[in-house]
Image 1 (tube, helix red, strand yellow):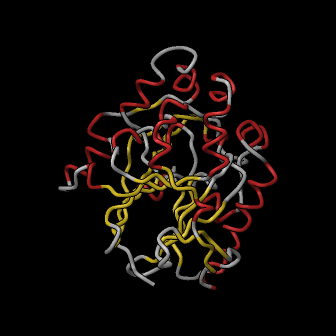
Image 2: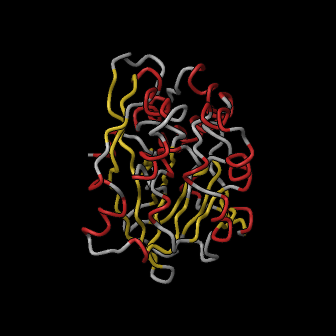
Length: 273
């Protein structure tokens, strides 16, 4: 197993009632950071898990009806917060990012995909076809903005099911298998169904522990620890409520075992700190 260095950074945030993310939470609006992970592989170079918000997202939601996206979840973003700008500040140019691994195609997760034109893009096959198979309005209703991942990038697409399936470490039970993206067991894409079509997380070995980037399978670490899903009206609007709750229950079971695993939701304020 190859341990990977990694870094988590925030690419802006949205405002939304906390009650939409966890049963029993307050209806007050709170910040949900858009978190992106940067991994460094000794052979395959720089890897991003999701891209967060970017200028392309702001442009795609400037006019109606796509403006509704920002009306429902107001976004607070500055150009200096883009993944590309933050990488540049660390001495890493966007063109040197070799791979972008996509949890799912909601706009806040692929809003800066256009900033990485040299990268191979990893995603779920069904999610890709849904993104480009829906009518403009039904796509928007499901949080999808096809302009952020245009069809012509299909020459850069790698689907998860093109990779072999690898058994996971017992430390990650009750999760048992993932798609081995590079064939060396270093980065494993694990299905976490429910939030959106083709929703995946990524597991890898960090310097001192396993890291499981869980995307939107939970919106906070507390939701995992307490096994508190969003209300049915929220999960039913975008995905499959029962599948979401099964995924969250499995993450809760993993956390409850107390093993050497760090679980990182994509909008977690605790992870942001």
